[in-house]
Each structure stands twice: as structure tokens, then as C-alpha cells.
Amino acid sequence: MPTENRMENIVALAKRRGFVFQSSEIYGGLNGFWDYGPLGVELKRNVRQAWWADMITEHDEISTPAGAPCSFDMVGVETSIIMHPQVWKVSGHYDLFADKLVDCRETKARFRADHLTCYSVVVPSTTGEAPTRIGYVAAVGTTDDFAEQLGKSFLKRMQTAFARDKAEVQIGDQQPFLALPVPERATVWNPEAKAVGTLTDPRDFNLMFETFTGALQSDENKAFLRPETAQGMFVNFKNVCDSSRVKLPFGVAQIGKSFRNEITPRNFTFRSREFEQMEMEFFCHPSQSLQWYQYWRDRRYNWYMQLGIAKENLILREHAQEELAHYSVGTADLEYAFPFLEAGQYGELEGVAHRGDFDLRSHSEGKLCKENGQLVVEKGPDGKAKYQGSGKDLSYFDDQTRERFVPHVIEPAAGCDRATLAFLCEAYHEDQAPDDKGEMQTRLVLKLHPKLAPVKVAVFPLIKKDGMPEKAAAIYREFKQAGIAVAYDQQAAIGRRYRRMDEIGTPFCVTVDGDTLTADTVTVRDRDTLKQDRVSVKELVDHVRSRLRG
View 1: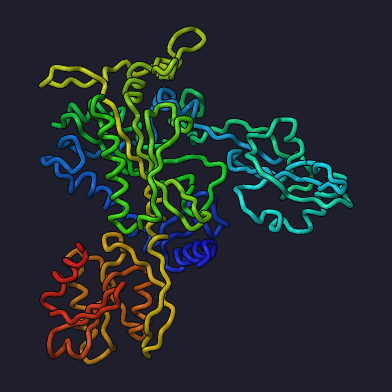
View 2: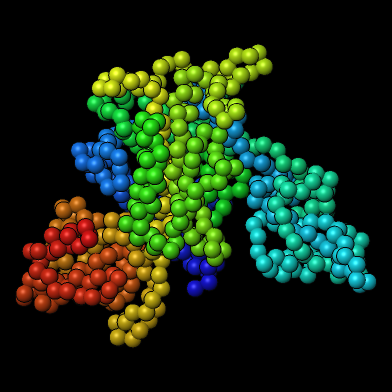
């Protein structure tokens, strides 16, 4: 299936079956915000639970996991969305958390400058000389058939604007908008505008949402919606150490909402202004930090594959030196081949960062910056720290080695919405399956991992009489009491009911038929293999539970 059609079909399915809706849709929607419907909220909750189970509830703090230097503790926290403004100044977000913004003066459209590609507009020579470049056309992203997409009407407008009415205009090589010299930006054309040179020079745009605490709206009361959950864990480092029996190394995990005022939210739920993060800060001795960095890179990569992401669709990419954030010693991105991307391209799913001791030192001493490769407190014009830290001692004392040090931090930071989208995209399949008459028909199926499926099992009476609905209802209630997400459906032919469950990813369907009433057995149908087994009603719940565990 063509990539663009596949993504369109996934988005259509998400709305049709109640996974994801546009926020405030009845008022025309709000760009960058999404609502999760009845099935979507269950899918996303299952993603959160799978992550939390891996990090916290199923973590074995006694044994040493494969690949880890030693055993370790894991605990969870939940910190507030609005924090003291100094948190964001000391962390660097207040100064550095910005994108380059470009506006179109005519259309009022807004773009991220690093998302704009400028295609050279050239007039071929008829005398054998080099072609004449007369300007650029701006577009978001890159594509081989860009000129074709522009259409003839735009090419005619461009010829007129550049006084080349009779010349043949061609779209040639491309380069990022930020790479163009400032004078040449005057010849850049936004295809949606009527005039040339309507794009402004890039300017910094802070991505944090501002708000105010208290009754007065003044600079003294200004606060921010958090752009990440990480800082809440750093500022509570001492509280966790003092209130828990954790010893280094240990991890602190958190799931929660974050907010970024993205310039151009796009690609369904991939880039949103309100999103949910699943982050963990792992505190360790500096001498072991590189080992832990490798361990968490590998462990997070394997987590996605264990839940159904195909290896060929997932890569682990180490950041080049020039890509590293101001705090980072090293960062690796887990990237997924989302269907909205061109073949061979990947989108960020999760980042695993080696943050060194930047965060704890910053919140203790003041905002840090790099000078000659070393982290030092950044000074203001008066020679004092630009932003004062808390002044609290955020070091760690090892009572066995009698050593005091500032721990290093490894941070696996995943987006819950992006993970949910990746699992949804990976699960989407179209295949052939027999209908009620035994004829092969195209079947749309979500092959979600059983742990993630919103509904684990569906119960059907074959017909609505002869005591079958009553028996099916009793089985339905047994699954409910066992805590297994179950659906009941007695409408339409059995094949259509199977199709409905396949489309939302339900792994198993249980059918109550005539033999159930005589032999006390039911048919259990497997979503992926279509195989049907007879199972005793007494053993049914345990049978399904064991298959859900895999």
C-alpha cells in the first residue's frame, strides 16, 4: 500500500472507531491538540501501563538484569505541571528552548525555519550559457515532484513576478532556508502568497506556554506550563533520597502531561502542543555512567520490539556532536519509520540522553554553560551567576565508600502519544479472510500486541435465541470479574462481528453456539491466525489469560 494512503487510512480508522478525535472538532478544531476516544484512551493507558510495569511494578531490584553493571532500585513520582519559574531559568529552557520562526507577511502563515526547503528557480539558457537563477520557492520538506505539485498556474505567476513571461522556468536544486544569505531571502516565494519576498528573517520563538499564578498578571507572577517532566524529578532528588531507602544507582520514573507551543504541529498526533511523556532519570556514579548509558539504550530499543514493533522499522541513531543539547554528553534516538514519512526516513520515538551532572549542579549552583569543554556557572554582565541556583547541596554521599559526589544522569525520555501512534501504525494490516459465505474478502485488522489491545476478548452468542445470549452474558461477566477487558456483541452475522473486533485489534473472540449448551465448550478464535479452538467454559478465563501473557 502506498505510504501516503496507508497513513490516511490509519487516521480515518482512528476517528471511525473512536481512537483519536480532533480537539474541539465541533468548533473547527484546535491545531496541535487531540482527544482520545473510548478505544484510544484504553490503548494509550495500556502503553502507559506497559512502560510503568517495565520501569516500576515488574522491576526486580534484587537481581542484576542482563547487560547491567549491577542491580538497582526504581521508584516513581508525580510532580506538578506548574513549577517555580527559576526552575526553567536554571535548566536553560528560558533562554534556549526556542525554534527559529519565519512568518509570511501576506498570508500570515507561520513556519519553522528548519522545516523550510528552498528550491532554486532557474531560466535555462538558449545559447549554451549557464542557466540564470532568479529566485527560490519555499516548501515544507522535500519531494522529487515538487514542481509538478506546484502546478501550471503557479509557474505562470512566478514567470510574471520575475519578468520572465516568455522564458521556461524550472525548479532546480534545493537548500535549507536557514542556509540562504539574507539578501537572497528577498527573492524567496511562499507558494501560497501572491508576491515575492514575503517571508521574514528567522527569529527565536520560545516554545514554553506562559501563565500566571495568583490574582495579578505581572512579571512577578509569571509561570510556565512545563515543557518536560524531567525537571520535576531533578528538583526532588534529595526528597527521594531522604524519604526512600534507595541507594545509588537508582531510577526515578514519571508519566505526565507536558506542553510546547509548537510553531507547526503536524503529522496527526506525532507533533502536538499538549502531549504526555514517559520519562525516567537514572542516577549513577560518574565512573559507571557510560555503561548505564549503553544499558538503557539497548533496553529501551528492545522494549518496543517486545511489544510488536518490527526490527526493520526501528533504528537506534547516535547523535552527532553538533546535534547534542547543551547538557548532553551523548544522546541516542530511537526512531520509527512512520507511514507519513518518505521511504528510508524515520521519526523520533524516544531519546536516551547521557546528561552528565548538568541538571543537579545547575539546580544547586546556577545555570551552567560550556567553556573550553567544561561546565561552568554562566555569568551575567555584572559578573555574578546569570541565574542563581537553589543553593542546596544536591550531591550524594555513599555511606559505604565514604565518597561524596554529584551523580550523573541517564535519561530515557519517551512520548506516550508517539509510542501509541507507532504501535497503531505498526499494527495496521490489510489481508484476506473468508466471510460468512466462505468467500475471501479484504480484512482490515489491527495486530496489536495483546498487552496493548484496548479489548482483550469479545463474547458472541451465535444467534439471539435458544439460551445462547444468556450463556454468553454469563461468560462476559466472568471476564469482567477477572479484570480482563471484554466486549459483548450479538448484532449482525458472526462474520461481521469478527470483522468489527479485528478492526479494533481484539486478540480473541469467544462464540457461544449449540455445542456450548450441550458440551459446555465454546469456540475461541485467534485474530491473527484465524484458528478456532474448542475450549471448556470452566477453563475459558484461564485459557485466555495465559494466551494474553504470551
